[in-house]
Length: 198
Image (cartoon, rainbow, N blue to C red):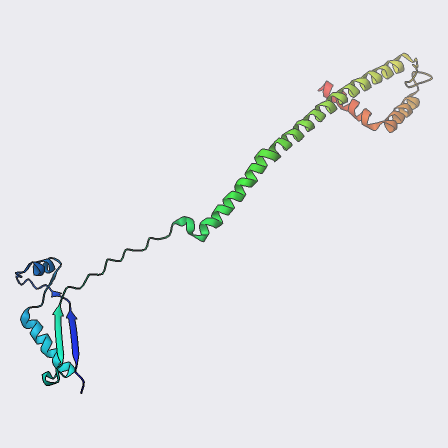
């Protein structure tokens, strides 16, 4: 038969408030644990001998040692990742950058272009109004001359010509011809007359 050798290392026991005398025991007690007493170690040794089938004649050895185990370092909590590492943050950042780009494009490029277009449109409208006013004044002068010619019965070159002052049908035909030749100018003259009389 072969010889059996067993070594057992046990940790300190939880402290029960029993007074300890040695310095190692007092250090262990400060950590809330105490060393095994010699009687407790002897009982544990006998228990181990019985479990392994100890035989002194065979030269078996059983050794039980009490030593404090090293406490495991407290596990530090894993810090939670910052919000900038989350996928939703990058989606939001992309959307905000797109919005800023659109705003810069609108304010930096489109706004000046629209200002130039509206200013050009206003200039054209003012020129058109000025030109329309001149045309209306020219037509008014032309119509005034035609009225004078009708009243005097004298025809002037380039205006309406009548044989006499009292021929209503000829005057009506002449006015119809003027309306059919340039209806826009006639409408402007009539509009101007209406506005002047209001």
